[in-house]
Image 1: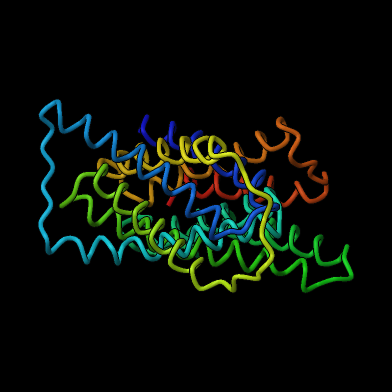
Image 2 (image 1 turned 135 degrees about the horizontal axis):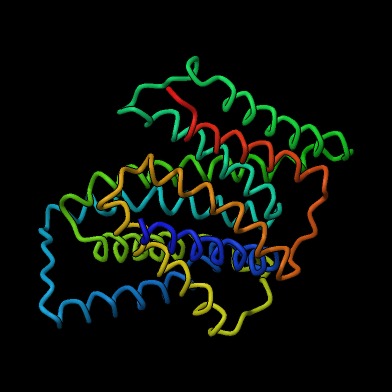
Length: 285
């Protein structure tokens, strides 16, 4: 369980860094260059682990499957960065809580959805989500600009949820370090492959120093490895309960670092959803 709590903090820092760097950069270029460093970090960890006699088993037949597992992870990351480029931390956190609720509902009690037995938590989550979204749409005349980040964050959590499930299932066969490294290699390859199709006369983003990509890569490298090790001993639906802390921590860090000044009325939706999720995990069945 300690792995998951530490990964929450690392993921929260990672989310705040995306919110800082994504608005001024090309998503694919940013993802690809960051993946260079995450691959190097995880490759170094794999090398160090191998030198202390930790054995890793991997067959040629595993490689295509690892690639397929990496694809939804890449798609989720792409939509996540697009969400931060067009939206904000609070919007991300709302969909992170919504994802936590859906995953918890599906997985609680070995796959049995017990909505009728615990209606109050779900009602609170729905009310909190509606309060937030209606507040946003009511206070703007440009609906298309507001709905865009909502769709990006929704797609991101859908693909990342698929990745979470596939990784949890495949951890019984492959080490978390190997799984994390293969994920980053797929992300890097896909990002640079798609960048190569961009028109040469397309507008270019202002360049970032390479050490910024290293800063971006470090927390997610830690988060992925800690999260995968946590999944090895923890059911992914219980991990979702721990994931409740990630969006809240992300909002707090974003506020502390001055990246976002959330409207108090908009925060009401986040608070209502959080209360609903707390009830969901303690409500008697």
